[in-house]
Image (tube, rainbow over all chains, first blue to last red; front, side):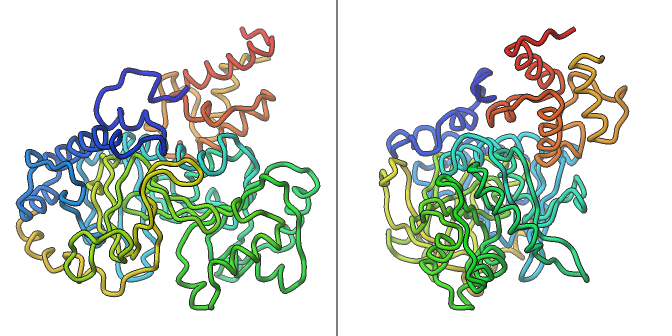
Length: 382
Length: 85
């Protein structure tokens, strides 16, 4: 039984979370999503001085709620790099997630039990829709987090991986620390893939897109090695494409090579997108399919220059709204990522929700995305 | 031989490097920093190994504290006809 459904529904956010991720048409989603967002805005407005100042600066207060998600104010993701924003008493925080900070300072997100519970539930629901509702062996192309992790401070990379562990009934890790860097244990991985090929068990190979391709698929391809994993085995990969693109590896090439080397259909190769400021919300696409927005969030694409909502099909900065974060005000965030809406309604797999593509990262997004307003808010806010 | 309650407490105390006396049926993930999703997986795998049972994804998400976890284990054992003290 679902833990949320097993007790009385107490608020609009919990009510939204009782829904499956892709079962709501727009007309059914709006009456649930709007009140949940209003509830989340009210909470952060009342309990986070910085967020309140930010909303007031944009002439917005919880009473001015709108049916249109594009009219709700948003924080640029850079806001989370400048300070640790929390909307609950410090004693309620149980962990901090830090982004990898490829450029500049890392984002820091403070998580309390309520946020953790909501995000775990939302991500589990979306993941289950794509990989199935059962547990299976996970082969993880990363280091064993138990070796080094502090229970309180978690890297975004580790946090992203952990969301999938719910679906594991055994876990093997294949990156090892050596000479100050991480190296893939090729021998161990080849042995494990061969074992799963023989066993017929539905395995999931999980890794960051670049590591998966450059360190595993490409090497196996060059060695003319291949496996035939069971029919329903999956590859789940997360993380950006920038590094692969710089090596001129296209998505079709990636899918073809992964499929050929591991004996999988493209539809069993699933790309998950998410970002630190809304950890737990994941957007998935099988093969070459676009990502589908679940019931728990909304995506708005904003024009690069005007920051006004872009038309469907037009590329712009990705803004994501979700009522799930309770301990920090990450409920409406303008990301540094570029994307476009490519469809709405029901997709071929029967999932309801807007469909979008991620096209890469914006250059100087922070400066364009309201960064110019931040200093003024800082002097007035926290 | 200890019953499932004692054995679950032993597993949790070992996993979270804490004394059994510091744990209670009401103790949950919010009370122990190491009881995160990784810690959760480790205790689940150890319980499955020791009791020879297999939880579903919903099971893994369904308990909020040690008492509920023990109840889950006892339900599985009862379904298999194992008497619990």
